[in-house]
Length: 131
Image (cartoon, rainbow, N blue to C red; front, side, top):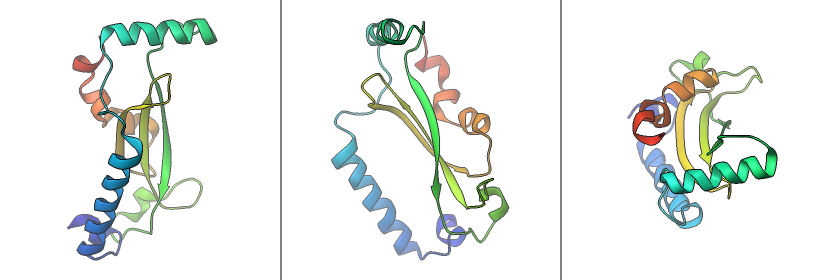
């Protein structure tokens, strides 16, 4: 298992971490399934952002953060950030209620934000998700 090797963990530890994380996401964060809004919901969201903040055509907010990790065994320089720590990147998209509508994780911490976006499902599936 590449993750176990990269982060100096046993496969059983990686399995337990993934299982725990999935359980937390399902139990605490995902009230409804994470999905892209239909056209009507996108229009209501755009109206909200325009009325509230004066920005036209906004249907979602996107941002990223870094999740600290132990120094990977392989390719560690790719995970090393300008803040001098090792991370993987997490990109999230949320709606006006701050509900997640898209989550993407796994790019090396040293990757540029544009690289993370271009490798995310949001970007790769943009034709089917953005009208």
